[in-house]
Image (cartoon, rainbow, N blue to C red; front, side, top):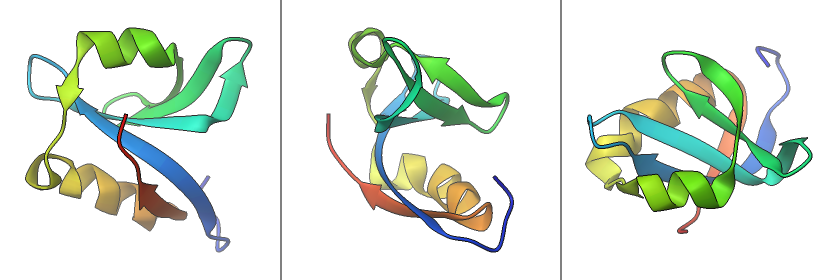
Length: 83
């Protein structure tokens, strides 16, 4: 994804019980039944949207800012959305 091109994408930020934040891209299909996701450790991966929503809590601005900046550095124009 590291290009000079910016990609506008809707992102839902969620927090796992251990405090890690995951970015879900609900409009970006990774494979059948899965959306694209991104975490600092592991980076892009398919995710079952509702399963992640059920297993996580909403991340606050303070909690997701670092991950949002990371996404912007690699070329995303992030539109924060709620789940």
